[in-house]
Image (cartoon, rainbow, N blue to C red; front, top):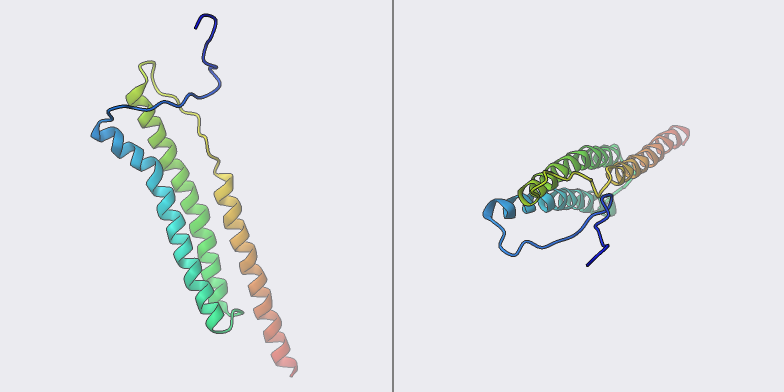
Length: 139
């Protein structure tokens, strides 16, 4: 169409009709790390919540496990963001003649925010553990 151009600051989605094996593997690298991290976080949280439901949730073990999930979420999120950004860069390099395009669509802030939420809950549980210990000394 005459007078129509693609916005250089935007992005254009397109489909590869016959991707090579390398392109397919790079695409898997854009998706799989995030899915694996979410599955690991979900597995740990399910185990933690199950143990808390079956016994006392206000334990040092619960605090430890929540802090571990917080660290895995934050550090793993950073690793996932880095891996997927590099994979997106590599995938665009296989398709663009003008070079590569690197404009991260996602932000690391989401992973860090969720990690901070888990760490906050760990601190709340830790305070409950401390309050219970104080109460036990009074009785």
